[in-house]
Length: 164
Image 1 (spheres, one colour):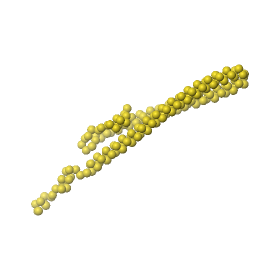
Image 2 (cartoon, helix red, strand yellow):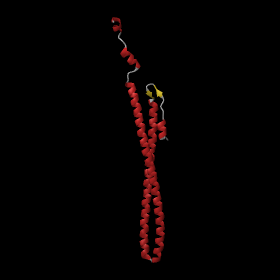
Image 3 (cartoon, one colour):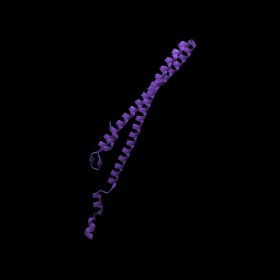
Image 4 (cartoon, helix red, strand yellow):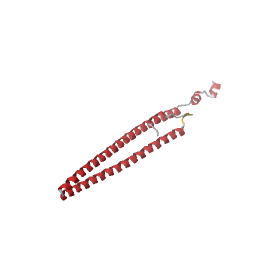
């Protein structure tokens, strides 16, 4: 996979009047493929985050069910109530701890990927700007008179030399 340093250090072979279009196109294709892979990875991670959020919601439903069970246990008997309450608290603590850990890990991963994505976008903008500058410079060179044109512009017509 390409790194920003690879993009920055990429050198194209010089050919007559500019860079090789094929090499530039191939390199840009490679950048596009890698960028596309990153987008797909980001989408996959978003889907994974959604699945983890569904698990958290499931834990919340479990928590709600346990609370209802606790109420029923209170109505049944004091001894059963105490036992069920302790068990429910333990399960809730574990569920909350696990849910918080999953959410925290997912958020960290999403933040990291978002940061990497933003860095990649910045590198892509920088690359495009540099590429535009190089292309403009080459266009300016192409628009300037060539040495042959300058000689023809300065040449004295033959009839002026003979008549003069």
